[in-house]
Length: 261
Image 1 (cartoon, rainbow, N blue to C red):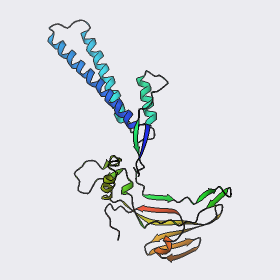
Image 2 (cartoon, rainbow, N blue to C red):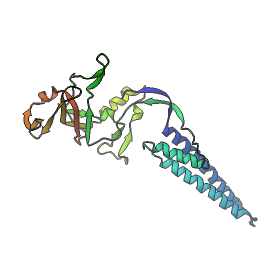
Image 3 (cartoon, rainbow, N blue to C red):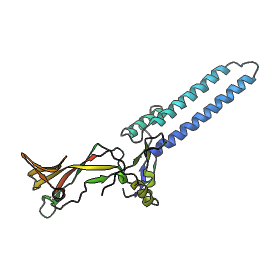
Image 4 (cartoon, helix red, strand yellow):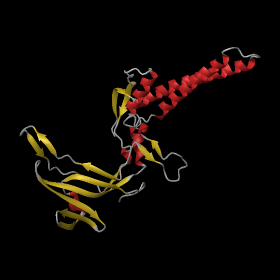
């Protein structure tokens, strides 16, 4: 979640906002033109030839810009097809030209956040690496510290609606708090919202980089169990913590406010 300043980034949201503002200006202009032409027609005692067709042309132009505005507003910048949708819309605005316009660029703050929380969070510890001295793949046996409960709130771009809140929105954008000047303030604010995941299983690989055996530590209603093929026995949480974790599986506990002693 550390903020990194990146220069000249293609920004879908900036592109959308710019084209929405442009389309809105066109809608306002043609709406004013239509209102003015309608008022002028009413003031005249006799309708001039062609005046009715002029109003129809203005209405058609207004409808066209209203449709363009609606299409831009419906684009979801979080969707993977955002760039493709924008390119198609820009191509239509350019009367079908094959070469779409480039997205707007600006300096941005880059940081990684979760936007959609999974029911089960799978974390992979990459233990294989290339050893330049031997020229082969090797495996590290360095222990990894992990907790039984994991609070994902500081790593989320969206914060859930507090209980009892009168807000009609279920989610709110929180990444704006993480500017270089407000990072500490934003992190403190996010820490007030707790989204806990509970560790349910740990996968351990025993062996070298090319072969070996997998064992599993699994949570049960009566504690932790060690599972290796047909062997199943109870173990302590301290034993689980000392294993060489290869994969960690955290399950959403569905508790937004939870205290861990």
